[in-house]
Length: 348
Image (cartoon, rainbow, N blue to C red):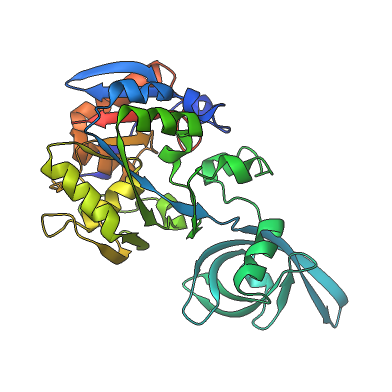
C-alpha cells in the first residue's frame, strides 16, 4: 500500500481560512448507499435516524501559540531575540514540551517573557523540542495563557493569515470542557445550539468522549509503504457512561457515528477486544485499508489533506475507490477543505 495511493490535487483556493457562519450552515456531502447528495449540515436531523448515536469529542483546545522575547546581557551588551512557542503536551515533571523557534537562540536556564504575567524558562531539549517550565501553575497558568496565547491554527491556515481573537471562539467546539488539545476536533465545529436541539428533538443520541488532539495530527507521512508509518500517541478516555450508551445503541441495532476522526480512533481503541469498553490511556492506533471496525457504522468528518493518515482512515471505512469518487465530487462541486471547511457524512 503506497503513500501515492492517497494523493490528489487540491486547488489552493478551496482551502478555507474562516468557518461558515452560522456554524451549521456549512455544506455537507452525504455519501450513502452508493450515492452522493449535496446537503447542508443543519439538515442532519432529516438525514439521521432516531436510533442513531453521535459520538463527540469534548476536548478543549488551549491557546498554545505564544510569542515572547528572550533578553540577554553579554559581551555585546544587552540583546534580545523574538521567540515563538507552540505548546505540545505537559510532562510528568511539570514542564511542557514545545516547539520553540528558533530554539538555537535560547540557552538552558534562560527565560522567555510572554506577558507581564507569563514567563517560561528553558529546562532542556528533547528530540528537537524545548522543555519549558512556566512561572505559573493551575488556574493562574490557564488564565495567563488564555490572555497571552493564540489558537494553534493548522499550518495550512497559519500560512495564509495569523490567528486572531475570533479564532478563540471559532476554533473551539460548543461543548469543549476538558482542556488539553493543541488542535480542534474540527468536524464538531459545525455544531451550534440550534442543531443540537434539533438532533435531540429527532431522538438522535449523543455520547461524549475525550481525546486530546496533538500537534502530531499535522505531521506528514514520510514512508512510501504506509503500513510502516508510526502514529503519534494521544491521550484519551471513554467513560463508563459513554461505553454503556454506545454498547446499548449497538445492541438495539442503531448506528454509532463518531463526529470526527479523533472520536472514531478513540472508540475503536476502546473496542479492540471486539466490544466497546470503558478505556483510558494513550492511543497510537493507525487505521488504514484492511482495518476491521468494531463499533463504527459511519463518520462525520471534514475533508482531509492528501497523503495524510486521515485520508487512509476514511479509505479504510469507505474503500479507496469510493473515497476517490467522493473527493472528485467535492473538488468539482467546490466544497471548502480542511479544518474550517465543509463536512461530509460517510456511511459505508
